[in-house]
Structure formats: C-alpha cells, structure tokens
Amino acid sequence: MHDESETRLEQIVPDELAGLRLDQALARLFPDYSRSRLAAWLKAGRVRVDGAIWRARDKVMGGERVSLAVVLEAEGDWRPEPIPLTVVYEDAELLVIDKPAGLVVHPAAGNPTGTLLNALLHHDPALAKLPRAGIVHRLDKDTTGLLVVARTLPAQTALVNQLQARSLLREYQAVVSGVLVAGGTVEAPVGRHPVQRKRMAVTPGGKPAVTHYRVVERYRAHTWIRCRLETGRTHQIRVHMAHLQHPLVGDPVYGGRLRLPPGCSESLAETLRGFRRQALHAGRLGLVHPESGEEMEWHSPLPEDMRRLLDELREDEARAGSDTDEDEGDWEWEYVDE
Image (cartoon, rainbow, N blue to C red; front, top):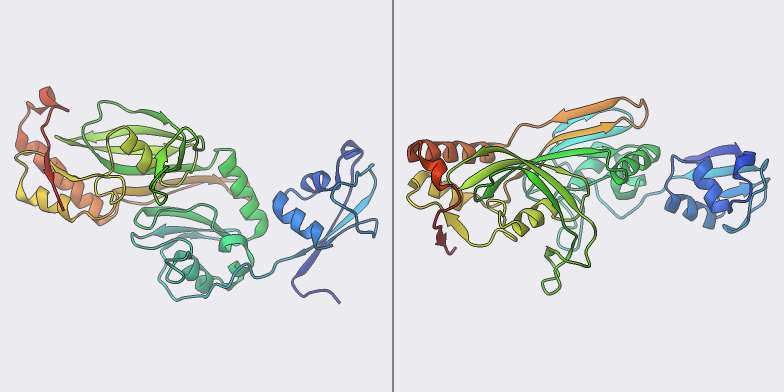
C-alpha cells in the first residue's frame, strides 16, 4: 500500500539521453525537483527503471520507463506559532511576505522559536514538508522588506534556479554614512572573517559577490541609495558598503562608531543615536511565476524608522544652506562612543 502523500510520476527515457548516468537522466526527466532531492529519492529506492532498482551510475540507453515515487515528509522538528505575518501576495505556488525588523527568518541555535519559519507553518502547515518550509532566500533579522516563499517543491526548485541564474530581482534601499558622489558596482568576494567568525568580510577566499548601487539622494554627511544584488551572500550589502568605507547607518556589526555631522541638530543626533538596526529595506522583488511563467513584481514602502531618518537628514541639509555641495565629503566627523 502506498503512502497517502505519495505521488507516482512516469517518464520514458528519450533517445537523446542515451549514455547518461541514471542520476543525470533523472535531472532531465524531472526538472521540477532539485538534483539533491532526486539523489535522495534514488538512494531510498523510490526510483524504478522498467520495474527494477538501478544504481545512480547505471547508464540509460533510451526507451526505458522510469517511475518516480514522490513522497514529501516533514523536514524538521519545527513548531507552528501564531506570529503575525504581512502577506502581500498568495497563491497555490508561492507567498510573498513583508518582513518586519526583529524577526529571524530561520530557527538556529540561538533562535529555535519565534521565527518567520514558525509563523509560516502556522499560516500553512503543509510547508513542513518542504526544505526550510519553502523559504528560498533570507533577510537578516533587522532587515525589513520582501521575501518569497515557495508552497510546492517544483515552485521551490524553479525559484532557486532563478536565484542561481541571477534573474530573480532583489532591490534594496539603504542609508549609508558619508557622501557618495555617484553610483557604482562592488565586485568583491565575501566570506567568513578570518578572526571574528560570526562576521563576514571581503576576503580573497570568499565566494564571488556583486552589488550594484545607485544614489537616490545626498545629504550633508549621508547618502540614500538603492542596491541590486546579483549574488546573495550573507550580509552582502552591509559588508560591501563597509568595504567602501560607507557603512550602513545603525549597523551594529559593520557600522563602527556612531558618527554625527558637526553642528547637526539635537533632533538628528537623537535619531541617529536611536537607530539601532542597519538602515536596510528590501523594497522591490521581481520573479517569473513558477507555474504561469508570468513576470511579477512587488513593492514595499520604506518602514517608518527609515522615513523618519530621511526626513531628519533632509531638514539637516536644508538648515545647512545652499553652499554645502562645495564641501561634500570633507567633514570632520564627530565620533560618539556608545
């Protein structure tokens, strides 16, 4: 008797795949599933070739009937929790979430509960049978904005493929220290810091990482920018901007000491002192729908704390008068030890 959640799929091996190993042929025959998932099913005996169990290295000749028993099982010991979610889009294949600051995406040693994953399982218990409950990409705990979650295994595979092909659009807004004269691209490998292992850093042994940034507005001593990711390394924007010596405002890891523009108002000083997270918001997300093939895009407005910060910076710029452009980038910072 078959498992209630088992789905049997069958394909005939076409002649053009003749000579391939079985594990290679499976990836062509069942592209909705990742190679790692297919390999696990093959090892578990869920793949039959003409009714027999083959080894991964056995070669197909064309014409064989391949049967795959797809069984989705709970992926981890995760508990659903009634944590509020802002769902900006939902259908049978995917969810788009607008994540608030302070919400960890995935359980880890220091955060076993209270995460976005726990909230997703409460919203849709079926996600328990998907790797990482369908989470395709992550945002740091204190980064706000848009994040896509797959609701089926084929959708998750398709979205991961878009990430790997760098076709999934992720655009962020950030406020950085210092005045950027123009936009540009940072292409610098990111990996674990050689000494401080909880930090990331630009390091020769890191993975390739590319961030494009454009200036939205300049202020006396800060810049509002938009960033687009080609790659999705841990802390990538935060590390790349700090590498340029323009760290994100409020970044507790890469921001260094708090820097106040000389002569700034007490209101701006209080806002900068009180900004206790990296000023980073995932405001735009674009992808090709895994089922319909439709190009889709979502936008999320800046959160209140970043809007308030930008208002204060504009007021500071206006108070400084119209001659500040001559001195851009030449300020002697007032450093504040916290």
